[in-house]
Length: 434
Ligand code: URA
Ligand code: CA
Image (tube, rainbow, N blue to C red; front, side):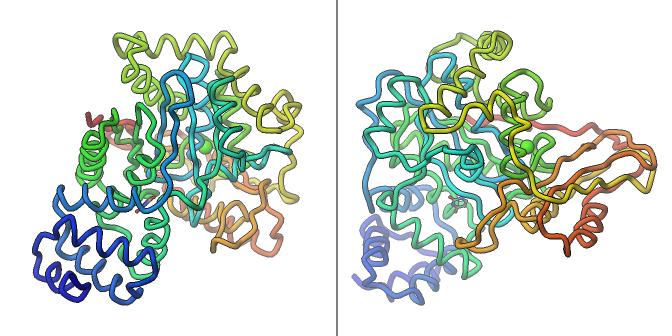
């Protein structure tokens, strides 16, 4: 077997065997096959695609390229959630404590933000003292004791995906559905929770720009979950505007806390209830959607979800006085309010642009090495379908970068489209894939 013939085969759209897929993943991970040959193969895959069997084999090869995490020492039903990446998506910080307060175990390995999408680990690090680099036994102990722990993925999990993803990122081969599905699912399956809910984003701020391609991606990921015997469901949800009001690390932690107390934005709450209900249903903790939602809503009302968040923060070394009094979070030096120049309805918000503005204000990274300003970000005062008067507040941003303020004010105006009322009201959840 040799890599040249594998590239040649895929160039002609032929199906690769399991052995051929193992050969190139293994060879590339070990550094025996060079970047240029794998680049050519990835481009051939983008142009000719992989069928479901090939995608399963690719996920399997990546999953077995490194360590597998054994969650069997954790009692109870372990659940996990993954989002394909959005703007201002604070869901995990709400969903985790929420389902843990209902008795599920949220033992999750999360990622950092890159580009215009934020990462759960960075958000958590805006709580002073919070440690996201727990050793495996501490992760397991905390999960057992309080039902929730969130840590960073260790370097030894799916090394093949790490190498392939970096190469895809620099060779314009990220946006292939089979490559995305196998990349995401290999990481999830290496940890292997009992039930997994996928939040597949669609819209201006997401990889998938239309519901049709998001449906295809969801179907492949759900099939992969099933093939490896893990309960998996997907929700296809809108990323046509940022989720909630806050975009930025400390700002999103504050938003998550408010949501856990029942005072957060409607869309974030609705999404967390929908994803949480799926997890309760897959775990047989509820008989139907209504019952599942009722359980979760009750735990927001009676304060249990919020208390669970505090237990979680405390167990990982975070200063819970910040959770009790969110005014302690230090935001960036300059606070800039942007008021509307027009009167009308918010027709559209360019979520990608908002994500990029937040990144450039300091909330995100341009490269993996960039240092982020945890106090930077944006609060949207108006969202799609809201009415806004001339002179009324559209958004506020926080930054330490004084010289960029005027430019970013102009960008915020560009991100908002104000005019006639939309014919159809904006939808948050499009559909679910079982
Ligand atoms: N997220 C991933 O982890 N992998 C992809 O390929 C795309 C998004
Ligand atoms: Ca948000």
